[in-house]
Length: 250
Image (cartoon, rainbow, N blue to C red; front, side, top):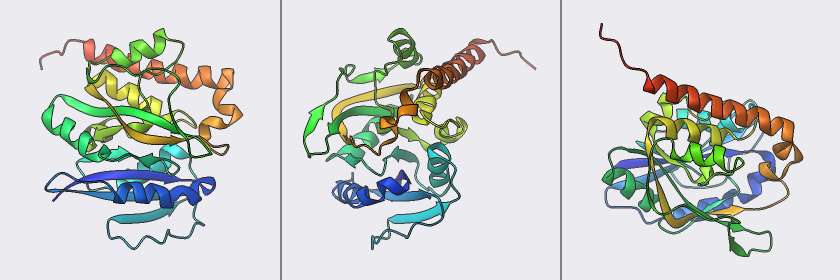
């Protein structure tokens, strides 16, 4: 069996949502010859293991280190050739993993996939996101960065829907070592070195609630945002410059 690894960082405010995330995973219909594994990593050493009696689910905890490090510790335990992110408070839609796998198998030059998402409001209502998605298809290297820098830091795709080839993820160092926007940092590095693909069919219900990271005041603090986005863009542009340099024969 071939495996896609689903990685989930967990922080105490989000533990109560894990059961719904699990049900969305359990409902996935996989392509023939494929299976999923779910690697849950708790950011801190005090949480009890979730009561999922499923051999496909693996739980571990580590000292508090933030979202990026927690995701990377989950990846360190993974065995799949593709890695799909699923935050603890979100849910996959029907067919999400199947579509990711199909794209990465069909397009050899595509290293990563993102997809449309829908917001899940506290009252259970599902609504479209506030701004539009790109057309379905291949995203050429540099396309996402140019859109990000040219549109007041608005991303054309949702980084939390990321599915990536594991070897490429490791080559990029995993999620970027930032206190916030680590998923954006990884996406910008990936889109610099590899073509991506956008799937128009929604793959995720993105839960909106007061305890989510993006709802905290520091996430939108203008000084903090300028620093971390500046670091993200500088890294991507440095990668772009390195790739543009001609290689010197030895």
